[in-house]
Image (cartoon, rainbow, N blue to C red; front, side):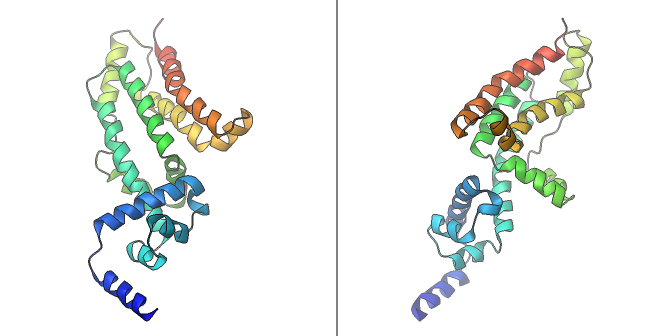
Amino acid sequence: MLTNWLNLIVKMSKKKDKNTEVQILEAAKTVFQSKGMDGARMQEIADTAGINKAMLHYYFRSKQLLFEAVFKNAFSLLAPQLNAILNDDSSLSVKITNFTVDYNTFMLKHPYLPNFIIQELNRNENFIEKLKETTGFPTLDKFRLKVNEEITKGRIIPIDADQLFVNILALNIFPFIGKPLIKAFANQDEKSYKTFVDQRKTAVVDFIINSIKKH
């Protein structure tokens, strides 16, 4: 027993290993997706990562810090992707399509993200400022220009670009934050819910484009 603790102290005295950190984050992501923030336990995360709990606490002092690290890691993958769509030179309909498809595809793989954002915004008003520091945080500059261009050309009805973006965002976000409610109303199991969300990639795009198209 003493030898084991001495070996652990030696390990902890060394610089944190990047591979171990990645291993922990992957294990944590798996547990958080399965159990959620409240249901996840540090011991289970340590077991999944193949390390002991003391080593886990050496890398991440609390479950909250670990959850934030997993979230930031995932969001740093999503944010630049969405920002590129909003600010490229594609048409408005292509932007709406690509944003919706990419968002839903990503969230099906990281379903904990929307609820975590809402939770943190309610708990910590400064959380959004941390998010905005993320590399590639989405901006609406070119999206606004494209909307106004389409209005000027008479292709879509007059609509405020920011309102349109919030409509797109809301239609894509709610199925994830309202998952239990949707499953209850529609009498869906997990498999049928995932099929439903996958179908929304088309349903949301058609709904938005038809609602703003000038007839």
